[in-house]
Image 1 (cartoon, rainbow, N blue to C red):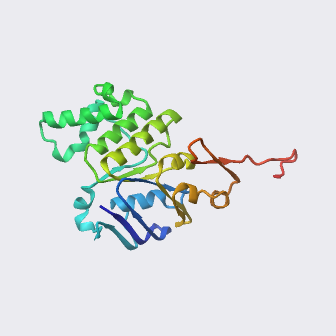
Image 2 (tube, rainbow, N blue to C red; image 1 turned 180 degrees about the vertical axis):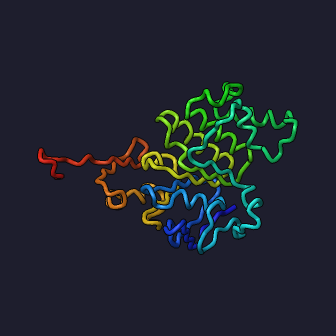
Image 3 (cartoon, rainbow, N blue to C red; image 1 turned 120 degrees about the vertical axis):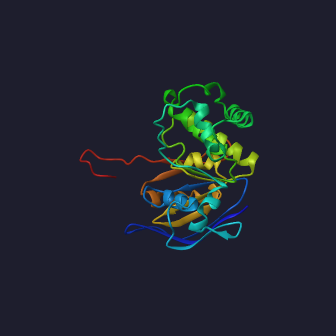
Length: 264
């Protein structure tokens, strides 16, 4: 499978959130979409899911364009995890995960469906939470449960909108490790909107850096994370460091002020 964006423009209200964006995504790779707030990251992800219409251009899956009249067929191969998913119902974690097969569920959950859900939870590390109320879990545990729910659909494409933005460091790493592992093991096309550039550098095979609705830079993190480009885009001074594995680490530099409050 190949997922392509060809010269896509997205207009929401009176604002153009994406302008002539083109990109190609391949199986077995994790792509991170990065950029300041309001630069069209979530709009682009929603367009890939068919939730936001495009004003011009094309989105193609194996050469076949996204069409509104075939939206159900298009989404059949996509697992979409939106940001800020609320879970108000009192359900067990296992029940939440099983909702990933809602189309296949009837009045009775088969043993095969149950075992499949439990095996997946075991793989992700939350099998011991199966009978806990989803409302009793931490934010990180809920995100892992929702990730299992998406995976239970056996998608070929994963779209994750800020999956770790509300998590602490431990759960950020835990979830992104699982995302990376499943992308490799299942040969998925995974596209995630992220805010933390250093996390993206550790996990993403390629990054798309958006600004003002256009791609400012794209490619492997080492090639894209130029301090001048990052500083201009985010309007902040940064230092480029490297971790022990050689991955880029972006460190914002605190502005310095004199006593009179004048920026130096």
